[in-house]
Every structure is written in C-alpha cells, then in structure tokens.
Image (cartoon, rainbow, N blue to C red):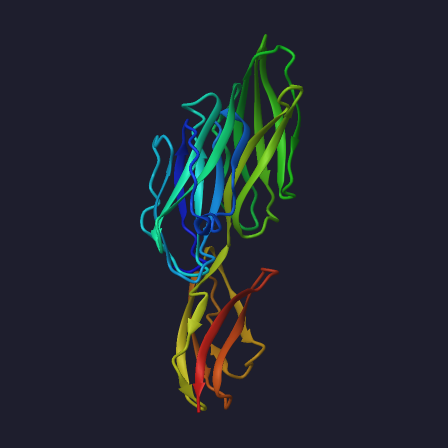
Length: 329
C-alpha cells in the first residue's frame, strides 16, 4: 500500500478503561498517546484521527482495531504496511448514546513481525445542555469558484441568561452568521449559517469552529466542519504515460477534459518540450473534450516528465497535467 493511499477506519467509542503494556516497537508507530475530545455537545459528530506509520525496515501487519467495550466498532480489516506506509484510524465519539464523562481505549493489535498491542486512552465529556442538529457543518461537494452554505440548529436547555457571544473561526474561507430563533425561560435556540468562500482552494475541507458562550464553567463548544471543494474542470488522466520511443519516433495519447458547463480550450502547450507535443483542439464549446496529443521524441535519451498547460477561455488559472515516458538510445 502506498503511503499516499491512506484509508480511513471508522470507529465508535464507548465506556471502559483498561491499561496494558505493549511492545515498544509497536508504540513507536502510533503518533499519539492520548485521544482527548474535550467538552462536546450532545448530537455533535466528534472525530479524531490517529496515524499508524511503519517506521521499521520490516513489513508490519495490523490484525485488528477496536475499542475496549466494542460498541458498534468496526475492525480495520487486513492492513499490511510496507516500510514507510501509513494508515489513518478515525475515532468517532458516540454523542447520541452517551452523556457526561466517557472513557475508553483504542486498541490496535499487530501480528507481524511479532504480536503486540497498543492501547490509547480516550476521554470526552458530553454536555447535555447543548445540542447540535445536525451534528456537524457539512458542506458536501462544492464546485471551485462557487459559495457553499450549511446550517446547524443549536439548542440549549438550562440558565435563562445563557448566550452565545462569539464564533471562533481559524479558516479564512469560512464565515458564520448566527441568528436567534427563540428564547423561552431556559430553552434557547439559535440557527448558525456557515458560508464557504468561493475563493477556497480545491481539496478536502476538515476543520473545527468553536462556539463561545457566556458559561464560565465550560464556555467553549467545538463544532466540526467537513466538505470538499471540487474542481470546475477536470482532466483524466492527470499523468499520461507514453510508451518507450527512440529519437524521431512519435506516439499518440489522449486526455479527457470535462466540466458541468460548456467551455472552449484555447491552447495546450509545454514549456520544457515546446516542439514535441501537438494537441488537436476543437474550436467548439463543449462539456467534454477528448483531446488527442501527438508526441515526437527528441534526441534526448532517458526518462522525462513534462507538464502540459491547458488554457481555457474565460478561466484565469490554467489547468495542468503531466506526460511521462522514456526516450531510448
């Protein structure tokens, strides 16, 4: 398994606390010694990630991943880690079933190159007076260049003077709008609308915003944010492999460029091998372009990897993909 392929393992945490010793070589592969969720709200989706990385010269096999009580926990399955490979374990606290302080252990068992067990203490305090619905800010897939919005209802039951004073946000692409909905005695409701800026970069979004209240005992309540900013135009494949060629020989490859709306390709060029690539481009606006590219091998023996630049009409930023191959003697 490549170290760039990092699957997620989903777990649900419940109550228990057992401490056991484990082999030092196994402990060295786990990047944390404690999982602390802090104070979280009822109904919130609280997740933590633990990385297991094979830092040894031998192949490592994870036999299982579980929690000490086993409530709704899913095993990691067969995971073989070559030297340098890693896997992410996602630990999810069940805030619907449990209340107040909850303690458990994440248990990772290895059976290769030897039997070993790593136990990581898990702790959380699930407050019952604050409830999120839904349990996180979930944007889903947002196309690059467009805004995303998500809404979470916040309900409080307790002191009649309880209030939300601020929303702390570290991500510059996120903006919060808080609206009071109702206040009847100690039952208080807010609606939180989060906006994801159209300037946000392409990629997965995973963050936390903090609800700041006037509760002196526990003023901070975290709220998770998840989503993905997807490109408006995609190129498949991102890396094109050309068969081995001798100098003077040529080969034809193809890329597919697609979007949700029709677009025109202005040009495809390569700075490193400017005269070696010739793309056949349609002058029509389409949602899908199948672009044949002819490559003529120069007299430059050896492996090559070149970046081709695709310019789209009306799109400030060009698209890029790579072409790799070998020129033989």
